[in-house]
Image 1: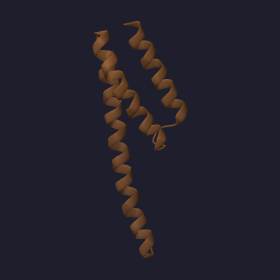
Image 2: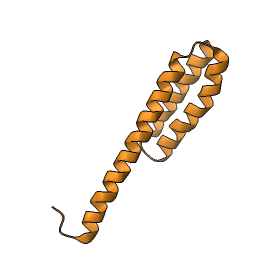
Image 3: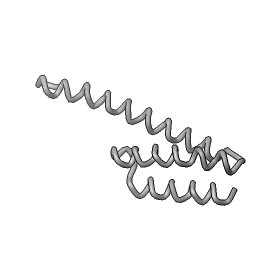
Image 4: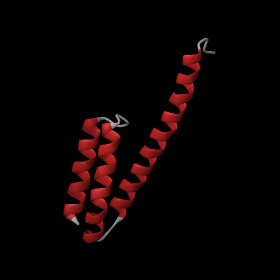
Amino acid sequence: MANHKSALKRIRSNEAKHLRNKRQHKTTRNAIKNLRSVEKKKEAEGLLSNVVSMIDKLAKKNIIHNNKAANLKSKLKKHVAAL
């Protein structure tokens, strides 16, 4: 167990950040799955901008690596273009 007041606070804040990051990451993964399941190009193009911004936010906050974000965006754009 932590011996200092600041260490106890750090434990609490880390847990809160962990839960927030986990929720954002899961929400983004679900959005990606929804985008991949869409059949109509117009609808997919509408969803693409939202999903790309979600991925960028995750990368900015270091929840996912920048290269992973770039790979995801590239694959999604190729998928939408192929529809």
